[in-house]
Length: 303
Image (cartoon, one colour):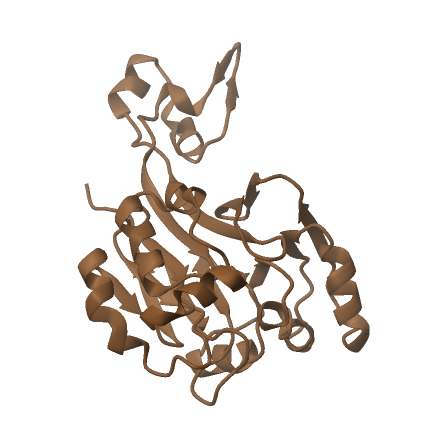
């Protein structure tokens, strides 16, 4: 199972009813955070989720509304007696940027490990998550992320018996281990069927609509996409500052066919996003104007 919470849905500046950008995923006791805008700690507290299990923090880019909440979050994690390393992922310059922010959070009881993205597409395996980073089109280097939880194929008892594989090895093979049995090397592919559909959440913000977004969002369980402007007269402003309108996001969703799309990263001037959703749903019906705290529990398809 994969839990997703959109902790903050605001862009540029926090509002009394809207924190800045952050999304958290939870799976198998491990948490992954994308972006950490001002107010992320408060949003976590309001949700009742703990920052202590955050093992991975991914940054789309280094504008303040996406990273300004980091020093306080790190201090809170340290005060919660976390000692395990934290992995951070982001565009080139990550270690320098985080190092500068840590001037006000210098002493931490855990190590920070940095993965700086240098390619237009990169795949990482971090704990239970497969993280695909893909370059988007903002006025600074910016990435979107696809978070996947893979699912192995079914264990085939008949194949295991036909190959005389001792039952004491079945569980280990099912878990993906390779086992040595005398002169034989037993591998998971000997007893597992084709990989089954896993879980996939795609996140992008601060970008113009580019084909790579729809490519990564194809058939996702959840597509979380920037909708900076809902007003139809803001198209030129979106193009100038390299952001997206609700309708551009919906067009990407229509192309990608995710199970649902949540809009996020609203302009401070956009006080009632829901007012624009009727036209958005004409483009992609299963669209929602997300609010802070929006949560979903995703589980594997029943078979």
